[in-house]
View 1 (spheres, helix red, strand yellow):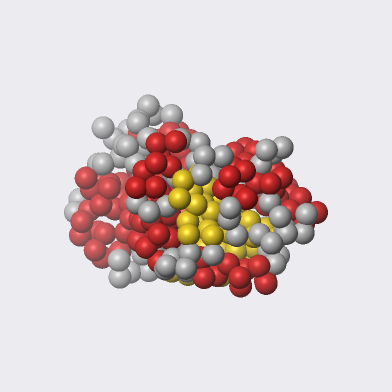
View 2 (tube, one colour; view 1 turned 30 degrees about the vertical axis):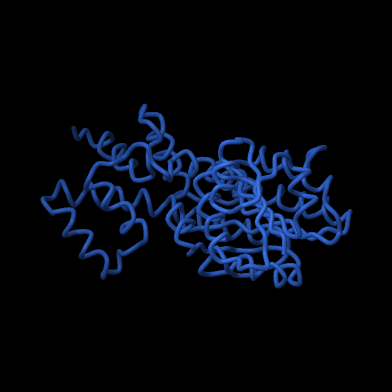
Amino acid sequence: MNIGFIGLGNMGTGMVRNILKNMGQNNNLNVYTRTKSKIDSMVEEGATGCYSLKELTTNSDIILTCLPNVDTSRDLILGSDGIINHANSNQILVDHSTVDIKTSQDCSNVAAEKNISFLDAPISGGPIGASEGTLTIMVGGNKTAFEKSSSVFEMMGGKISHMGKSGAGTAMKLVNQLLVSTNTVAAAEAFVLAEQAGVDLNSAIDILSTSWGQSQMIERNGPITVEENFENSAAPLRNLIKDLNILEDLRLQLGLELPVTQASSKVANDTNNMGLTEPDIAATALTIKKLSSIE
């Protein structure tokens, strides 16, 4: 099988390395991104470099994308020189990006006009999950196309689930991001409260790991908070804010009130405006301290 992968950012690079490690001798991996040096780097690790969307698309059986935002996904998938324009009915297209439901459904509908299978398959697990091959992959779209793609997903992920029709994978990712944002801010509040009440943070993290208050954001953000290592993150706050903006649009479309999510969004935005360099999601603790007039 010829596997094509587009997007070599913090997540895509780890995913590509796991495909290279797990794909076996009967498969080939084509890679493309807009930065030539990143393609060249992956070629040195065993991938086949492609230097245009057309080159990658026409030489791949399954095409995976992992892109930074909605506009980029729409451009590279739906654009006049995009993937669907160069694809054929024997191929499967998979978007691992976090986008809005409409974008996923638009991609599916346009692909269907050419009898091309499209799957929305966003991921969770962060750069560590991408590097270790333990990502959660939540997939929406045709079940047969999902089953044909599963062997590729298993090269990158630890949990792969078919969530339903087109857009269902994207919807599930947005539900996950709602919890990531609210748990991140709740963890930040807990850390500030513990510290100000005289509790050792390392001890607090240990206790919370076996208590009802446990969450992955406690475990992930706790050490970063203890070390105050809030900048130059591989999981920057701006990515979560992008997802929260998509969530806000969905909330309005559905006519829902999500007060906890909206409050966490404000904390995230306030933190992102503090002038830090690529602040980590755990940096929300700094806004909690600022609101509490803690130096």
